[in-house]
Length: 214
Ligand code: E4P
Image (cartoon, rainbow, N blue to C red; front, side, top):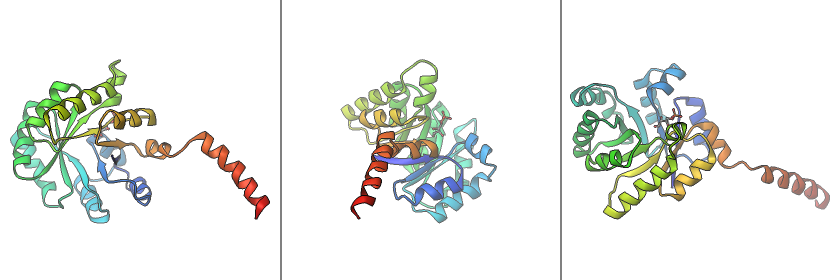
């Protein structure tokens, strides 16, 4: 049950890494654009500064060959580098090639069980079902996670389910309950994972009582 952070904000990563509760990072072109960093330099910095199991670096390209060429810029950085590829025909071909060379892969933009089957066939290390974007379209994202976990369990598939596009703690808990191996969280959702109004009010009472007994 691993937690990754879904962000390209260095300070947000540094702050949450210090908790010891984060094992990886996912990024995407939108997050990188918003943070204004250079993508390759940012991935190099993360790999250098933190001990993560996995750092997802997304590649662009209309063909598998172009995706593989673009992946080259990340490949020699360090073994935690995980090449993130779209769930398309070309993305799957590139995934298969990288997986056969021992490179970790994350097949992203998964919206159906059929797509998750194909990612497993391509030897993906991680499959990323986008829970929030399915919910945005009135389809249950957590039910997709449950379906993939059932399929992978039945067939002994080793591809790990990396639940993505998570916007609230309820969906994170559901994803883990339904069989996700990893949930990637925006920093604000990570912070809410350990917060509860009853913990806060209970602690206020205990602190007051501590003062009276010490
Ligand atoms: C995951 O790899 C993606 O970067 C991310 O979870 C997408 O989330 P969004 O749908 O909130 O943009």
